[in-house]
Image 1 (cartoon, rainbow, N blue to C red):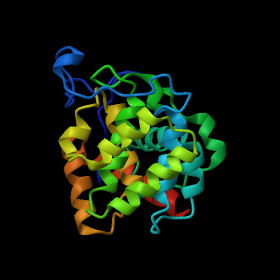
Image 2: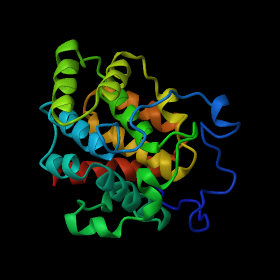
Image 3: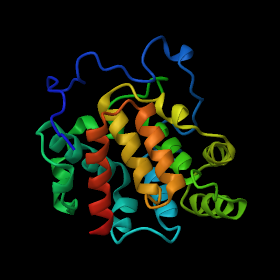
Image 4: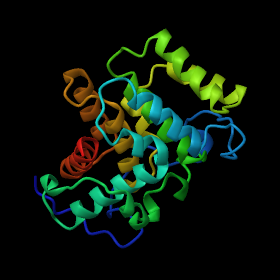
Length: 240
């Protein structure tokens, strides 16, 4: 892959880069109302993101770094996206990626944290990441009623409130296309986070799930070589 990405100024996306959710006020861009906007008290915030990651990573096909990802959810997502994006901008080969080490979490570019900016619908971007994870888990068509009930049960035990549980249940029962996931991204940084969250959850060796990832990368308008960097960074971290 050619890694020479567009050299955008610090804190900005590449010139001329448009993203699926840009344009129009929040009410015109779609999206849903979300519970628990305070990210505490049992809503669908950062702690819930980590817990949901733990459930989805525990579906029997993930690598040894699942515990790190589940425990530190948003921080790890940001670190993976940030490292891959930086390597892409520097023109390094995607295959040069090395596993994310816990001590490297302090080096994450804050622009890649879900809390850095809202989604295009004005809602906290954490919700967009959770939607992306659920959509990825459904990509193989095997997120059945038993798995849904197990996820909701464990999230309830973890302190998720009833409103948030209802939202998550509706999300798991919904048809979530790559376009639906992608429209929340208003920048290349947010698009990278959504791709990383999805890549963590899917089984990339499954043709069906790989096809979903490829469609998501297109919907997010990620340059192919950036998608390759994000993909490989997740792969080596999960295997590490």
